[in-house]
Length: 276
Ligand code: ATR
Image (cartoon, rainbow, N blue to C red):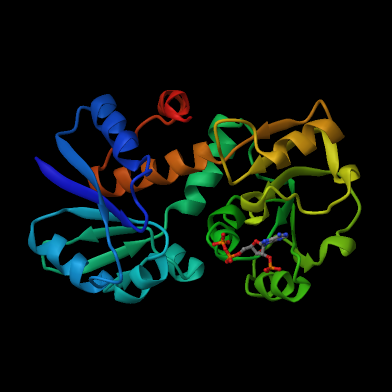
């Protein structure tokens, strides 16, 4: 039986053991997956990772607050991990090296394209926020060739700088809240951490079209405040929360480790029922 785990601090409420157990059942893979706390007051990320590697674990997921440590400690990095400047998936290779990957972005992209039935190709995309979470999704999102991407952020400069880092066919611009080009966007993604404080980015409701998809990277037992705001502004828009992204990033890690891609839709449903 191959061993895997997620590490973080805190880790008690992690859904990853449940998600990977459901994936393993669905694809009939023989594995165990645990949640392991790394308390930086008592030990170090590096020491714990070496320890898990020596104990024969095959791979590790890394969550808050260690994604940057994981980036720095990997022996080799995928292009996505390099662009995201963060790592959420380690593979322990037979030669003792550690490969670092970031599956958060592909998790979001697949959730929107497959479960949200909304392909990015040619679409107008508005992204709210310019922090670590947004940095992690841009490369896989741009690979889907959207028509245009605008990044808006409380600190305008951060959105502009982030936009300038990418050179693709897709026009990509950045601004503060007030300067968002006024038009209807097909896909609006909230990647700010404002929801943690129950706050909504102060954007115009006119940016939401009748058939827009409004996605919040946060999730909870109920629709998020941002989703409720969007529904009020434009009742016919479609809203999604970030549970599918969480399960999508896990599915991609599972694929890297096991070579099989689990179906996410039934697992989203099962995990949703476990959220209180
Ligand atoms: P994360 O890893 O969650 O992205 P982060 O890198 O600290 O964390 O980024 C947080 C993002 O949420 C930033 O875009 C931040 O805006 P600033 O760049 O202006 O700081 C945004 N954010 C956090 N709290 C917010 C609030 N109350 N209102 C609007 N935006 C907020």
